[in-house]
Structure formats: C-alpha cells, structure tokens
Amino acid sequence: MKKKIIMSLIGLSLLTEASDFYYENGKKVEVVKIEKSHKQQKKSSGTEVEYYKTSKGHKVGVKNDILVECQEDADCQEVLSAYETLSVEALSDTIFMVTIAKDKNVFEFSQKLYEDIKIKIAHPNFRKEKRRR
Amino acid sequence: MSLLFNGCGSSSASGKNSLVPDRENNSSELIVDNPNIAKAKKEPYFKYAWHIDSTNNILNSKGFNIAKNADINVTEAWKMSMGKDVIVAVIDDGAEVEHEDLKTNILLAYNADTGSNKVNPNAEEGSHGNTCAGFIVAPINGKGMVGIAPNAKIIIIRQESENDADVIKAFEYAKNNGAKVISCSWGSGDISDIVVSELKKMYDAGITVLFASGNEGSSLDVPSINDESEVEWVIGVGASGENNDVTSYSNYGKNLEIIAPGGDTQESSGILGLDDMGENGQSNQKNIVNNNYSFVDGTSFATPVTAGVVALMYGVNPNITPAQVKEILIKTADKVGQDVDADYSANNFDIKRAYGKVNAGRAVAEAKALIK
Image 1 (cartoon, rainbow over the protein chains, first blue to last red):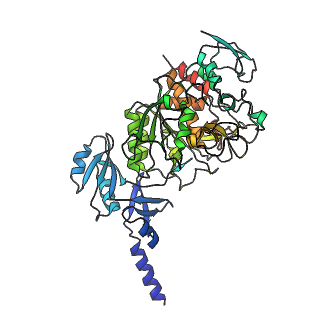
Image 2: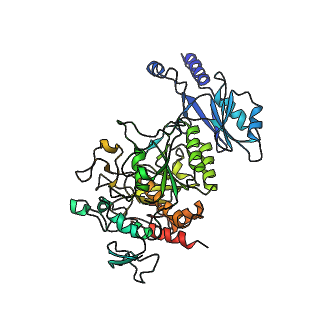
Image 3: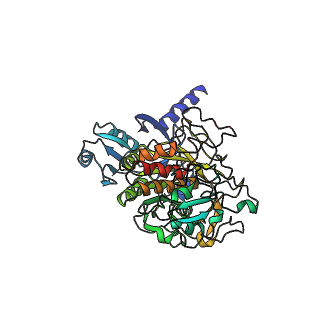
C-alpha cells in the first residue's frame, strides 16, 4: 500500500512539469497547470489558452506567444532572428511579441530567451484577470 | 475680465490674490479671472458635485451627509486652468462616444484588442469607462455634470482582453497620440514585468499614469500581491468619501500616493458621474438625476478625478515631469482623518490614507510656480 502511494506521488510530481516556470524581476515563479474539467474542455475548445496557477497563487493563461524586451544596446530583431520562431511582431520600439510553434513549451522557450544576455525581459504573453475597480 | 461671485469659501485671509487660499476662512467673496467657472457652476448637476465643491451642493438637503471639506478645491484650480490643450487617455472597457456629456471632448477612440476605432459598449453590459471618462472631461455645455478638466480632450481606449500584449498596445496608442495623462481604473494584483517596463517608458516619456488601488478594503502590502497601483512609475490612488476621510473599501499600502473622492454609496450618496449604461440607465439615479447619470463609488472614480487634477497641472505647466507631478500631489495633499485615527507622523504618510487627499488648488498652483 505504502509503495503504491509513493509511486502515485512520484507520478503526480512528474505531471506537474517541474520545468514550468518563468522569470519575474529576476526570480523564478513556478507554475502548475490547471487541468480543465471535461465541461471546460468542451466549452473552451479552440481557444488554445492553457491556464496555470503560479507559486504566488495567481491564475495565468498562456498560448504560444512570448513578450520580449532586449537590453538597450541590442538590436532585438536581430537577437530574435537567432531563435526558431513563427513570427516576431513589434509592439513598441523595444517590446516584441514572439510566436512559437504550438508544440513547443512556452515556458521553456521563455526561459531560453530570458537567459540570453542580450534580452532583459522574456515571459509568456500572459492572460490575467483584470478587475474594474 | 474678472467676475465676482459668491460661494466656495476658498478665499484667503491674506488677500484675494493668493494662489493658495486658506480654506478655513469662510469669506464668501472671490475675484476670479475665468468666466467659465461661473458657467461650470451653472451646469444642471453641479449642485451634486461635492467632489468639486462640497460647500455648494444640495445633497445634504436630500438626507445625505456631505462634509464641508469633502471636495478637493477644484474651483480654486479652475482659476488657473480648466485643462485646455491637455490630452488625457482612459484605458478601460470603452465608452459611449455619443454621450451628451462626453462627445465634444473625445479626441480619438481606439480598440486595443481589435485595432479598430469601435469602443462603444454593448447595450446590456454598459461601460465602466464611460463613467471614468466623464469625471475627467465632461464639458461645460449646459447638460448634466462637469468634469475636473472640462477643457481637456480625451482618448477613449477600449482594452478588455486579458493579455499583456494588448495592454502594451493600449499604452503605446495613448503615448503616440499625445496623451500626457493616462487613467486606469482596473488592476490584476499580479502585474507582469513587461507591463512594468512599459509603465517606466511612459514615465520617461513625460506621461503621468494613474492606477486605482481597488475596493476590497485590504492591504496591498502582502507578498502575493504585486498590483499595478503600487508600481514606482505610476500614481496609486485610493478613495475618499463624503465624510472627508478615506472610505472603508479603499485598498491601501505603503506604495500608494494619494486618495481622492470616490464616494461611498453604502454610507452616503456616492459620487455623481456619467451612467455606465448611458441613456439606458442603470439603477442608482436616486430619483435625482436623469438616466444619463448615476451615483457611483469606487477607487475607479477616485482615479479619473485625480487624473483630471493632473490634467489641470499640465494645463498650467506643460513641461512638468511625472516625478514633479507626484511630488506636488504628495506635498500639497490635505492630511485628512486626523480627527479619527490618521497618523502622518512617519514621513507625512498614513497607511490607510497614503499622503492624504488631493488638493487641486494647491497642486495646480505649485505646478504653475515651477514655470521658469
């Protein structure tokens, strides 16, 4: 019985995908996927947004797009051209939205970008609930 | 031309030419240089605008208790500016662009989610942004109410999607179209790094951004909350009420700057604004105003009230920086609540009331005094 429980716990910990985190203000914020219920899956089929709970307790949605800002002295278009992306859209003089293939892990891709010395900020294009106040 | 009128009790003991009168002196005579002030006071619902002039409203006679200093000294500020040539942006859920008390002051409309210029709310949902915009720029037109900066122009930006990219697009549109003030009455409690960076860009570009603190009556100083209103590059705004003190619902914290009238419909009348349902009417007209208007409350409305004051500051001094705007708002704020439990002994800051309540007259005078 004990063995079964331990195996189940190991299985569960693998399912939470330990590599899913993003950098916020230089620190790692871990995320755990929120599995959709069957009803939610039916309702949201086609929206492609996957929701996660962060280690700070917030719910964030992600798709296959990432927001990037490079260091001031870097040519961001050039920096991003080294990565395998589907498209790069300039949102401002310094902020770019990168779209990646749907089969890639958006958190891992964001981490890779963030760890590039020429990139200042890189995290998924989060969907966050905003409240009118 | 100077006009002589009775009213707001804002004359100074030291003389009529003082830029910053002593509000405790109740002289009823003032010399004003702006004839539009008299016109503003003739707007049909000015008598309910306690946030602008709490000594000249009739809500007390309708059973609501409005403290005599609940306003933010706007009429004094109007002697110096009504916001002419200043562009303000409201990023929210759109607005009714044909509203009788909004349309003439709308400069541009933009939907950041779609890239179109369609910002009107659908009839069932109404528009929170409608109310916010009205508090800033409702014109002097013989109809309804008047905004804090009735001669300013507004950019209505609809941004309802949840994604950060559209938030960036909204701010970029405001910046690229000349906004000097951006009012935001929403928040996530979990701002992304890229949005913080965008707010820094606004600050560096000379644009003052304001965010509402929220309505849970709770502290933002907890590790799990990283709210838009707490960002260093913005002015975080809480709400004061008809009793001239902070409201019980106003979120608070060490990174907020100011409180301003947001009203409290549970305790008193609320603050009169454009109805978020426009002509369809909502539910809080109190049998006092028509369906284009409504009594509302929230830090959502304290924020555009403050944004209006900032517009007046830019009106007298287009070259002030966001850092100076913040410094002036803090320096000139009224230290309300000291007869209750306020404690401003540490750096002039009270945890519930931040640096105090906005004083438009003093803030605009200070902004003007910086002109070299």
